Length: 249
Image: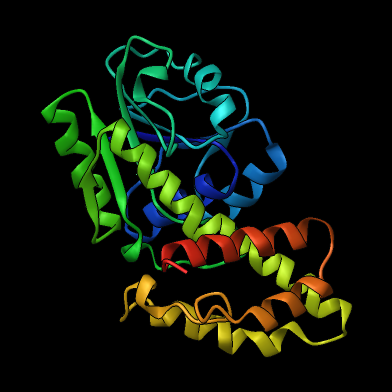
């Protein structure tokens, strides 16, 4: 099967790398950022182009959600299978007369961070059983966790991921701002962060909650509020209100 990956960002890089590491040949990686494509192609030893899109049996679109529809319109091979990697878009958004699908990897991707691809869940949606078999077989060569998912369910998967990853990372950034303001090395908080994440592998998050809000420790809550200002104070109040509401306090 001839496979082309479209894109040059984090998802495109890691998906291409996962394919190469699992001996899945790629006919091409295609995109508009020649500098990034050159780096990916040189590292993974795959052909690249910014001009001519090769004929393929499967095109996997790894671009921003805002670009998926326009990029998909570039594919004119009617008997091909085309899948996007978005967590929030329907497969029907793909603008062509080919077979349409979704091939969604549930992970946060950065080019500088190595990943264990076998642990990354993939969620598949297709128009036919035959195409589902094709994408399941492909994803199963990369990952031990492959699941069928409708667009409606995938929207909730993506929403859960935003809470579990993007919001949490933003809180890490705000925490570092506070520690930096007091010249406290943020590295000192990494064991706490590691334990917090590790704990929910064994304990349900709701049962693992600690801190002044779940204890309803008014004195500490008021003290912290005096130390904060602007949006950090608003975040602190909203988070503590949510914690109290969850535990009926």
